[in-house]
Amino acid sequence: MYGLAMVKGLMVTLKNLTRKPFTVQYPEERLTQHPRFRGEEFVWYEERCTGCASCAKYCPLGIIKIVTSPSETAIDQGDKYRLEVFDIELQRCMFCGLCVEACPYDALFMGSGFEQGKYSRKGMFISIDQLRQSEKHPSTFFRPQLESTGYNPHKNRPLDWKEVGRESWNWHRQEKMGMRLASGPDLDNGSAEELEPAGTSSSDGSNGASS
Ligand code: SF4
Ligand code: SF4
Image 1 (tube, rainbow, N blue to C red):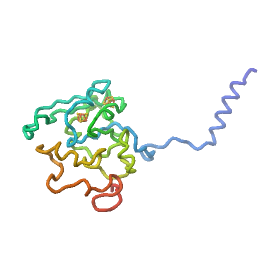
Image 2 (image 1 turned 180 degrees about the horizontal axis):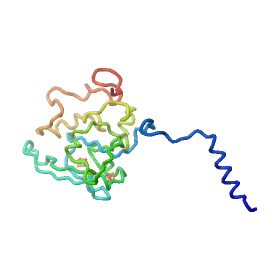
Image 3 (image 1 turned 180 degrees about the vertical axis):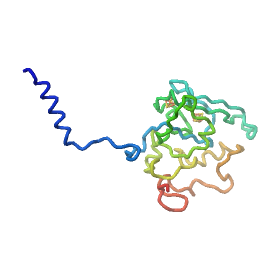
Image 4 (image 1 turned 90 degrees about the vertical axis):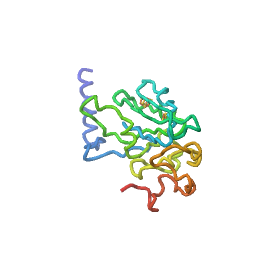
């Protein structure tokens, strides 16, 4: 019938006229992100990273650049590497998370932020220094050990490298023996059992929500 399509269209307009909007006025209002959200950031734990470059090999776009050199601090072991370059070309990243899935040592995590927009393409890469200095709020994407503790990167405190692995960090005691770690374990006195479960409480004994 002539004009039927127009009536149908108007009905859709009328139906949505009274409906509450599901959009929000960002940045004043923000939606709650899921803990497994894959943001436009990465969280990297140098203390856990062996420089194996599995992440770079698995990246389908080849946008992770890793350069290593033999570590002078662990010559006896003969298989330790110092990370010199760990750059991620963010502008080409599709946040598929394959690099995170490929990391055998739980050293690389997806990040949870999404506000790293830049005005120039030149700034669209993450350097090793940025990875070292960034606050560690790892996404729980592909990390069931974090998810099982109820960790929420958007609400809880940053996590230390000793708290994020599948295995006890004691496993790394021998692995990292002789390495010069900036914030590594106290190899003489520390023990994994002294750690509180990730995301459930902070070092001062309060709930893990960051201030
Ligand atoms: S998230 Fe995907 S595209 Fe981005 S660096 Fe990792 S593997 Fe490459
Ligand atoms: S982040 Fe993981 S996969 Fe990448 S080099 Fe380090 S240990 Fe290997």
